[in-house]
Length: 413
Length: 186
Image (tube, rainbow over the protein chains, first blue to last red):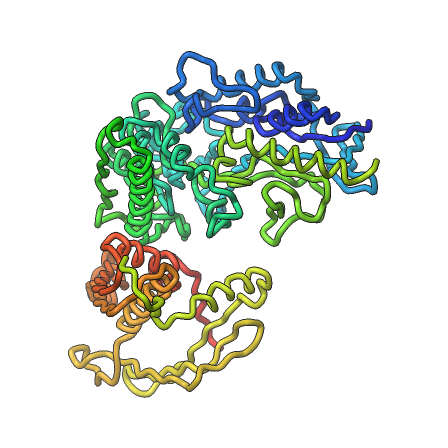
């Protein structure tokens, strides 16, 4: 089969791109290993909700129209929304089609998908950033008697053995699962490295309203001082569950969760934690306050101070000076270790010379370096800070579709 | 921050450091460094260590001169006190590393420093190293560093300075995180 563009992945990014290509009358097909929004159906725990409010869940030509603009969508509703969107835009999705290889050929790209071979002048990689759990090497030293889980295999606390749980990682995933598991009656220890602390709401508005209004989410990748850092930042400690104001370490401490430093090593069955916890908390507090200062300055400059409740600051993160540096995993106190240590993309099927030393795809704002006609979409801070969230694909897909369109025009068939 | 006529100068060449970051990211082999010291026993608990060369930037490098350090224990440990104790060298290493970081980061953030002083303390129960109580560890129970900084910045910016300095510090990482150590007979 011959087509102008092949989009790989029918999640929010791939569908946004499909809509942009249709707008430009660019003939294409969207290949999807499962069905639309596959990861949301099969690889997320059921109670997960988006961190972003519903009103912000915008896709090209489609705004949220439901009855709860200030709510946060559960995973199943995200899947349903994307399925409706795919139908609405008439996306040419080929479901249950797994891509085996993508390689460069003189006329563009040769894509092997199951038993089929497709030829396309351009290819859009939209399989996302969260295909595999990123598990640190230290996992190999965890005693065999311990049950280990990842966010991909976790469903709910009922599947865990009795006893304590060590949650490793303090991103949104780590704090949400620590909270949920601790509420089930299993005592939780949370190992926290560098993390991003933000309140769910500030001065009566959702934090994502502030992140968008102040222009922070619109910051472009080529204007960010430390892009490597920005692209590897853990997700903010937020929860989409209703009625929760803070999902930070203080909230977990108040609940009885024990917070320890970053997991450094497991030696002879004993987990050792970094003594840097206090500093990582100070850094998180300083960064949160720096953003709140920016938010207040913006509100004043925009003349909103009369409309909004007055500025205030939150209590600093409390760190117990007697925080343990070790935890023996062989005593039976801990029954489960849950790796909430982030995710990584799976581009193992990509047979193109486009990777850097660390294995990441090299690209300029989504235009892949080293393979003309290849694009990547749906990665953190791809073009702006908003790219990390669903609505970021709105602008990103428009820019990349424009680039793709002029690429086609610059090269005769 | 006060606006001054003169550019901020803490004696740190930030352009060179940023240039190094860029150059070494492009040539990762050159970023592999090996730091070395050699030590000779003198008598009792007294030893002398020397530091002269190291490997980095893909070549053998030399300090401007050879540095010597006498290491011993104090008289209350029935030693001759010919030098600082090894644990004090660790404190010197940590506070020296953090102070260098403060200066470099202040330069990068355009904060003029007038003075930086720091005191560092490591609390230790010596029953651990004496083998008298298996429940007491050999090393520090806690380390406290207190910085006094006079510079053109708010207290929050100074707090951010010492927080960032810890984040980028080699010795802070060495002290707070486990490291594999191999000691063998030559």
